[in-house]
Length: 488
Image (tube, rainbow, N blue to C red):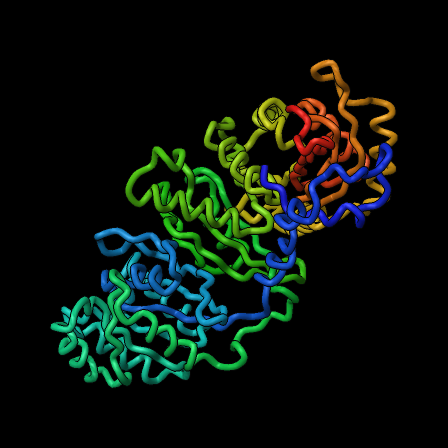
């Protein structure tokens, strides 16, 4: 378990058993814990400017997005149409944070599913602070690009033109030919190799306004909620129900969503950032192709969220995939809400069986909030906001050190740790290192068995609540006077 900032010994209050005697290592030991919370808070700035990346299918938009981000986020495959929804990513360049929105291929005359994808691109442009049009320089300006350019020239947003796939000096002339689109200087770039990416990023920062167009007035930004679960449990349907629009592509075939799709949603008078993720069929290491990268993005979306809503199909028995997703959320240390979807398909007999399944299988997460809804009909969807608030309140809570040690002293006196190796370890004092998730650090004279840690966690929840949030227990074993740590 990763241990983080816990404050210095002199700051954490009176010890439980005689206090510190100088046998912990000094500043060097505590330095590894300093500044963690500050770094986390710094990541939550105010509203960020938004860049929409658009272009026709298969011109390398997602590859270029990954290059701008400096990491592999967008799913890339050597075939058109992999990206379907508009997908947002946080980017950082020269100390300035901004949001990059990757979109599906934009074809103004598209029909059917491609028309829905094009509509997502148009919506991304209408809400962005700047637009980056990506053109395949080796192919040149097609009729599609000319139609797109006419739309962009009428827009009120600044537009940058990226001539992609300019991998060497020989193809610079291909980029120059794109002046004909009337969108200003074509910027030669290689999304695959990174050629020209720094200059393009500088140009993007130059065209951003000082104040982003869309501000929601929430300090630190909206709370981040990840919708996760196995395929076809109704994640995209729920997001569409919450937004009141076709925010995600929905189809009966499982696996429609590939990239995480985020939306700002107002629930119960508060703005939330919901992220629809790809359904997890397999473990990441056993998946392949697009499914492998989609699984990685889903895992990253969970880690970037503050609370995860795990959807299960209430009309079917609980599966191994359901339990695996729940475990991923717990291991990521995120607040958890269990949402039983398709409740309109559940009869009384199935409800009783589901209750038994949850009691039997959810041993690790009996503290999770639970809501029964139907994304299809909208039944009980309004109950989601209150349980999200409860889970996040627990996730954010910090118990004062004095109160924590007073409670723990009584607990240890009534139920001391079990003897190990002929010696009984003592808990000298404790502190809650930080919230998000709540993490207790116990300073002891010896190792505490896993069973006793679970006992402390259970009693801690009984005393202080923490409904909807995981609780982590970490043990710091005191060094002996000869400089060695007590045996584990």
